[in-house]
Length: 287
Image (cartoon, rainbow, N blue to C red; front, top):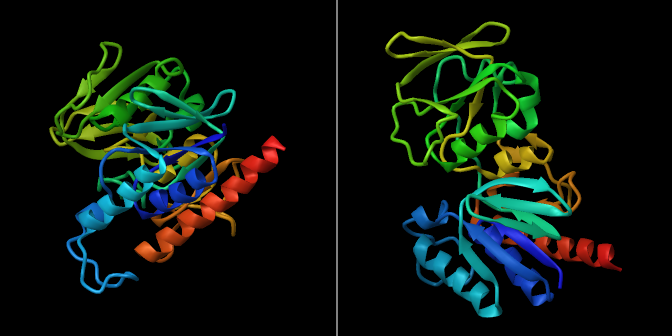
């Protein structure tokens, strides 16, 4: 039986799962907790509800419907997408090979407000260790973050670079860091450099020379994951065609991560569209 993995349990991801599961495709939703919907107090502009409904209520109703159809819903943190024998989703605990993937984790978080970060993007500041480790081979680099996602990026860099320092920017560590990775818990004042990254300066005035800085705060958003496998992005959105397909065969995206109107109705539509087009893609591959 064909299978797909949907990353994200919001309206786009759950909507997609209803179509793929009913089409006889084994469907797994991977989620690391609620997204924007779970934080919405009241919704009164969505079709079918005479009275306002809370975001958490609508979210749970959607998931209940998916589970009733047989969709598997797992709470695991996704840290990457790769291609082995087939597309594969990497979590902190497991690997999930799939015939297709739908990215539906909502819009990406804004980058932290650190002096020099925006100015040095593409000049040593990166959001993808898999993509850009090669450019820093044999050099000292920094990873900004404090959780499992930051650890994953650091481990991707270790075999290529000379050293990795994890800067938590004053936050408590939320992952077990091996001795091979240095840890600095000071607050960051600035990423230093003119034409390229040269160092990280902390608020204590200490300067740590580095050749590159990799941003990995919180958990990986849709655009972070898309970049890891070479999908095209523009700012904080994933570029898709009229069928919600990325430039990577078998990889689709839906919902807030594609930009445009950030509304439940749009996310539900795009989830349905991504699912129906992915079903066609899988059936064509298997014919």
